[in-house]
Length: 270
Image (tube, rainbow, N blue to C red; front, side, top):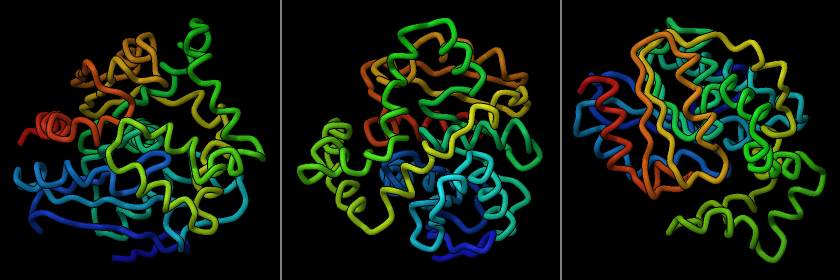
């Protein structure tokens, strides 16, 4: 269905029992709501009501042109507006990659709107900033960030029919659906603008999270190292669990959907 918020139109998909506890799932780059498809049946079987959304830059009706419109604070405001439009005072939040970044800011700055948080792959922003300061290896892992912020990123990612995008998504059996979607006019630029609009100042003072939280990290994640994963606990003052998965890459929702759904269910208590 289409849902209007903040003067834009978002593509949103709902499922599960209408009276179930609400779970809002936020995708990352370069995916969309479909990255959670294999998880949803397990959540629905537990009686949960799910909402997956194509976020700013991905939904055709929510694709502002300027990079400044993609600061992480804007995406956080989008989710608050979506909760309002759905008539939800609060929801359980599940986020992967950039969706996890949005989830951390929501939980830290608007705890009354977040029942529980399950953040996947990306840690609390201050844990990442610490790791970037003290670990050269973490800085090396994040070198791609500047490439994605560059003016040539679209050309690089789509060259030779999306060879680089396919390489990034090589652990996934259905990477082609995401590569094909990025040929839609404006979609790749909208998604890359999350990188271009990022400002360290927007997350530097992110408060400690005070809602029940699970952070899921995988030991073959090429983006986030162990220091950032372990130090995330320093910025959660609530019931907290770090789940360290073995043998799984950055693409947890699609490589281990049943297991991740189990972690979400355990956090929610169903």
